[in-house]
Length: 160
Image (cartoon, rainbow, N blue to C red; front, side):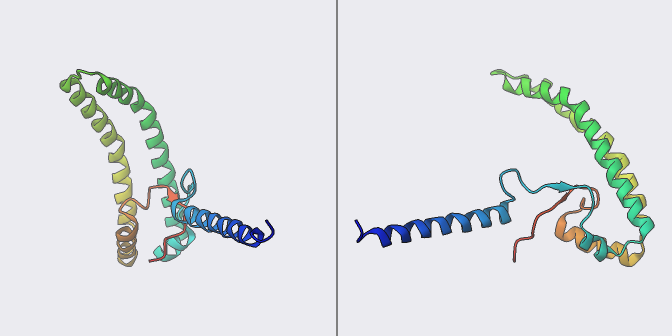
């Protein structure tokens, strides 16, 4: 038994190290079990990169809050239609006209609360300088076109 003790301790040590390293990389790249948390504000480096004035930052914060509230209310109102759609899709013999109508209703409602957001975002972008608009375009290429109004994910970027 004493002869195998160092080998058993080595195996336990390697296993523990492997689990620790695996957990570290899982958390870093996949954000843990529930994903990375969302924050209400843009990352400070992002704001610095866009070079927004204090008034522009305030306008952007207000736009993000209004958008979030509008979408939250819209999702709450859409729940009934979405559940009716789910019920219809769950039937063995679903009626495609009912599915099409419910899908159309959801689409129309979502477009309804997206239109004001697009208008407000256009007004915000129109107030930026040409250099700031170019920076917004560059960031949008990296992070997606809705990065200004979408919740910010607080995650570390993967090394390229």
